[in-house]
Image 1 (cartoon, helix red, strand yellow):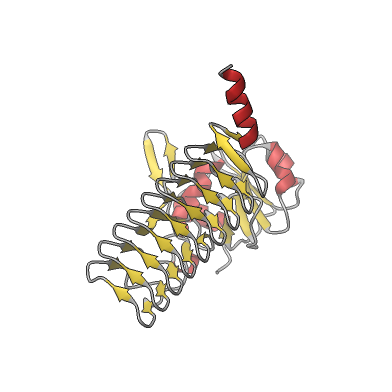
Image 2: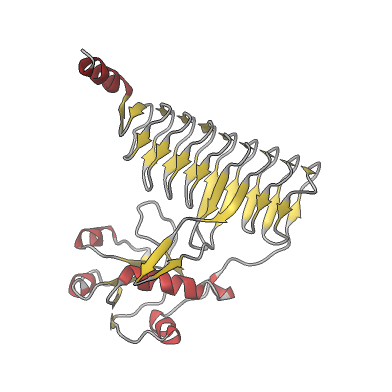
Length: 304
């Protein structure tokens, strides 16, 4: 991607009230999350606690005027503005109108021996479908989607819908441009009316790993990554940027919070609400979810 100077973008956008130090070019914009492998990125920081997470991948920081001196101590480029989060996403939305910021465009390709309903709606660009894929009627596949061999997609599934991601600016509610991609692995089954969202930034991926089985009415939000053989029966909701390991079972009607990690071979009991990290080989239950045996003991105590 082309290197970007924040001052030039702000000028083009008509934003002139800011304070700049040691400006550095960047190629990517991202939230300051721990599991990132991109380089030359621009992030926003609203709290002093987060400066310890700044690493070599960060070139530019958008922050508040109060944190300007703290940000300078990182040695990175710094831009202080009145509302860093809002400016950050406005810059992202503006750059999303530029081809140099987005992923390259290619014609959609379809592999051998696929069975695709004439009533399926597949983008003519930036979709790659493997071999032996089944796509039923009334499936919607947006651009920026890769589907592995032997995958089955049932009626009503939507892949690539924009993530639920809005920013409030006074009385205006601004949608965040969703420019990332989705990767569906091999031997995956997506049952009726499941929804998989596209992430915000061009380099980001929402991933459904090989051999995952996703039930009807499941919701997989932007930037979620599912490992291999994740079993997710009906009506499970997984919020944005959560990582779920291999061989995980998430039972019906469970809700998984955003930006957490669920370890390999975990079982989430039906109807549970998971709001924090879960270590591997766990079984969790409840609202909010705790160790299953601990939950049962508490239930016995509460009921005499």
